[in-house]
Image (cartoon, rainbow, N blue to C red; front, side):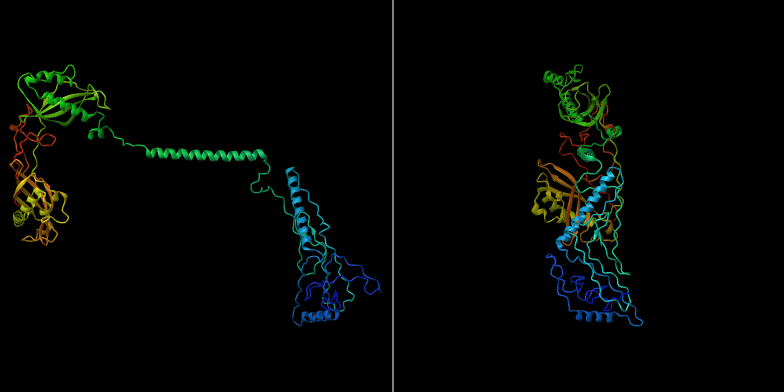
Length: 570
């Protein structure tokens, strides 16, 4: 057994062979058998070998080895420290260029092996194991022989392991890695085992942008065509869906109505307004007659009526009449004989003597879309006026009237305000208006009525102020007032008008905020009687028409009921 820690068992001038010294691995050339054999000259060295550094004298090397042996010797009760495995170094004579070439050759051999396995799989056979590729002569370094120790080991604590060979590592079959060609490792040290060969893959992943293996050019072209067609189909489908959505959202939609809704709102395709205007013109000619204009009247009526209609529109040729206003009363009855093309239209005619007459005129329309081709298709008929109803009485029992405030407004506030309001004098009205007064309160009548005389004034107490007596009003509290005013019109005729006003209490007094026309009659009922109306002849006393508009022939000085209020609680 050789003691690696003893100077006698050291290799290479006393340096232990099992572990590197303090100066790294030995760089001196191997000792050959020619040493000590006379004067025989050594073989000349290769010129390409690098110049080796000069070794230390043998005495100094032995001293260092001895000191290292003393330090590493285990003492009593202390375990021996295992030595480190030798460092793998590049072969002594291998340069960087040779190393790169060797690695390139190894990669090329691995590529050729994979290529051969791939071709074998394509042919359907099993991959043959590739032979181990020998290193190229340019990359294989010269094997170094370990020097032979001239001293026999004396103290054997540990068996001397052979020095690792510096020979070039050989390629392992089937892999691109290298393994040492020879030289065993020290027992107890972990060595570098050769990696196992990789198993055969089921498929190969192509390079980015390359074609899929196994399908050929046809498969590649078919795949591209499929992707292109699919993309086009999706694009066309998206455009179609968007077109449908935009088309539906931009289209005009109308709500569906059934027959009951059409009747309720009087919706029809018949041009009712145009036909009503046509019937009004015919009724005015019919109710205007005179013996002096009978020939011209008959010619004018013929332009409106059909062939079988009375050419004189029911006139006997005696007497005179003149229609001053003609108005459609809003009634339209369907003609069964003509369906949607005919209607019975009601027309109210007021003559110059004040008589109000209702006529029914049958009208036919040829073109419903444009209203062209109209004709009076029958004789007219005179009908009674619409039946009058009694107005129900208004309960004003809960109203509380402040007589004191009514008198104050009648004497101090309303006379000056109505005088300025009748003349539309903005400067004078500003003295009586609140800052937030309405437009009707600030506009006025522009001089149409003058000389106002304040009649009856009724100031209603708000519910919040009814619990105190005398009544007190907070600042900013509004009071509703009913007022009757006697005016003088532009012809000098006295007329009475009624108004509803909103008066606001402030620290400076009472101011007007709003003015509205019309006051409700609390008594209700009817002003005429059944004997006053002649339903057989269709005549009535001068009054407003059925449409609610005042008749032009009504006298301007018609009396207006006074807006007197019943006294409430006091």
